[in-house]
Image (cartoon, rainbow, N blue to C red; front, side):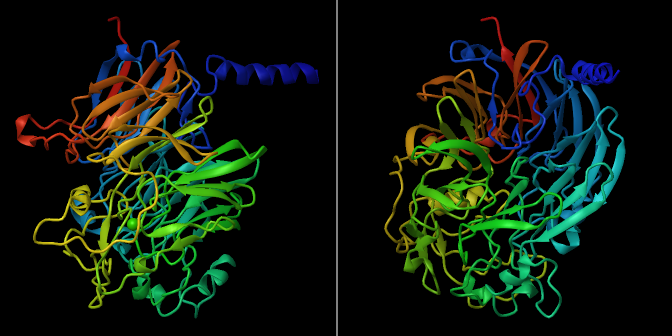
Length: 600
Ligand code: CA
């Protein structure tokens, strides 16, 4: 009898999943909880990827700008979210809309409260529900079949200058979500909500609050010793707006935290202090939010080096030893490999031009900061820029090649000088740095102002001399090439190959068992390379004008597809090409596009 029952249970689960093997659907932001963006599918491969053609498109509706989201695929349906947090479900075979739900954000009221761009990186799926982050601070659970609201929770309020731009993730039946806003005076945190009910289970503040009040959790007592002055009056920063991973075996979730606010440590009255937990990776227990370990990439950050970039879990053989690692291609230009169980530093090397530090301490991973980087009134030019060597664009890992495909801004810089006249201005960016210092500007967190960022990287004009810069380390940039795709060996910490195009913002990738890397380029192209050698096998113009989200791939009825969301963001010219003129063509509408192998 018992045996029969077991068999029945197995059958009933089996009937739900019989058709689908792992990796055929795209169920979570990074494809797996280790966020590798490695697809085991190989129907589309090096021999036929050149035949990839557009099958259908779906209009994402009003709200242009950058589409940064990764759509999800479940049960023959693509689920997605637009920059203004409109959630949609379409038939993955045809692109026909199943439902659409508009959270009706009060755009006029909220816009000025959004520090760093109207963007959204994605949704989560949990037991027949779509979990959607709304830019105005709400978290919604929608019925995946009908789009009807099942529960709503309030994470934060826009009047406090918090926004939500990251994709929620699911860990142990909880929704994990953080807040954006470190260019405004905010105190960073991330939360866990019961995925079934929406009830908040715990909150982890990344920055200690007013020390005259009790600490919300014990880890903040230690953190408060690394601050001084009245930091809590301006929040301190440390927002959580992108990278997260989950290891069920280690029973840990991993979260990256953002920059200190205001930017210069001096204005946080923290010269020489570490300011925990800004610019760190935190490993916490999903049940309780208890901190197990932390690793701070940028102690005493003064350079907007948010350390929220994608956190990727893999098992690598390093010096003959199998290691469970967590990895990050940080804004600060270093590629980090840590032990994800203990938090111990394994290795870190520059993958782009770096001048703010000489390198990392081999034993601890602590940066050896160049003395000039601790800037004051005199302007100093530092690399990478505040936009980062790598930003939110997803990288991917291919276990067959052992390589990480990093959308990289290979050479960028930014002019830093402390604004000693800094006073807190409500409702504005409170960066605390001097503007117009011969090429500065830009560098916000969610979507850095790429126009200003580009200006910061342009050769200085006759009127403005380039400020001094410490000596550079890292792979030598190729003249005229800013955005690249970098194939990086995380074991040897060395470049294997590179290809022009893409960059830390808007150049997202997926890698597949077909020996492929598929990448979007911010000028509207979809390209493919062989994963082992970097041979270009596909280069198609999607017809979008930029603001490209990363590609995904999936299998339905035995057929492999590739989909991506693209917007109408600022047109970023192709490397070496003259800037395109937006008046040349009618403005494109943001779209969800799906590709499959054609007949030609
Ligand atoms: Ca930032």
